[in-house]
Image (tube, rainbow, N blue to C red):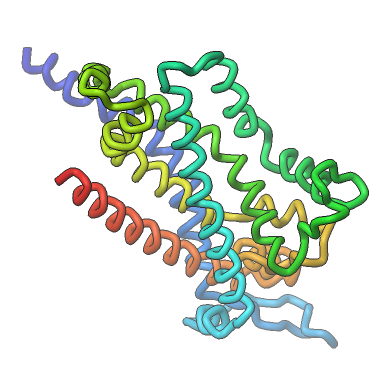
Length: 296
């Protein structure tokens, strides 16, 4: 009996073991190696250009000081935050609106509509960005690209945010819609008997009950916005408005694989991880406080 109870106790840990091993191998180990590289630098060797037998030596905080003092790195963070300010509210607002519309009593063709909204999420991000690039270009645009400059100094932020929004909107909509379907229908029927309209039920009953789910998808969207890379990198060849260091991850990629300075790239990437974790914790705390306030 005791042995059977012990097997039952160890079963959850055994089921988690493969995920823990994969997490250690493919997340913790590369992260630890990147931190190690961020404290190193390459010392020139012999020869006319110092390229013979270069060695790797300890650099202390030199790479971090270089990253902190790099104005372009902070400019890239500013561009990333501007895209996030545009994209995250649009993502949450549209996904919530679509989920509420699909959950309404009078809605028809729910299955088809749900699939149509989710479909952009199933398209690979690089392919979707290429398609949007064709739609933005004046020569191939069916949405007024010869009239509207989608790659202007200001409009480029909306162009990139638009691609990012439609890439994740379907996933967020499914999460919110699934949460809506799990709410007790008796509350909606009671509100309807009291004379509440469909819009009033959506705004005053459904939305407050969705607060924990909206907090979750907002944090997911914020993390995705802070990892912005595919969209500007894919659009870069078709416009001069996007540089090779337009967002922080492009800056890290340029440092590590174009300028061949993996040590500085490692320091910048670790700084970006710290900033991302801090922003996520802060946003999660604020959103939870707002949700608790709305429940009172």
